[in-house]
Length: 227
Image (cartoon, rainbow, N blue to C red):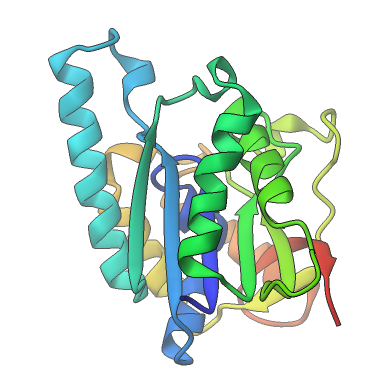
């Protein structure tokens, strides 16, 4: 059982979307589990290639280091094929998330936003929506969606639903942790002005913070909340 479950489509999405919030919640004594549905590397290589397998292994190690930096208690790799979630029936992805729900039984669920440019993000969101329906007697109290640099903003609001934040988490004291965790994913960092550059990620956090009068923040869209 965990207080919080973060569901990400790919390695580094969890850091880009809510790394500061993870670090803050961990520091506050909340148990945080991170589940990464996709293996994150094989779309760049031929299916079954040694290069693809090596990249997957490297990304797993990167995610373990990022989890250590952020204070994650449990890290799960589900191994779905990178950028090929749409080759599966949605039910197959839902079953993966339902197993996570049964294993961790969280109070708070954080997941990719459903209107992102990346198709894997969209299907991850749909699966979480299905697996975490607010049924009577379930422990989950809230489902929030997070934005991911180079996917949420590059959708330009053209895919439904558009990302419209309504909740901001102050990560002023934890922005350095987020950036350190992102550095653990060295191969995924890009040069500025790419949205996944360290400078751009920091600028986004400052921009979100300015919205609510703090030095740095992460933004979320509440999908549902049970009072």
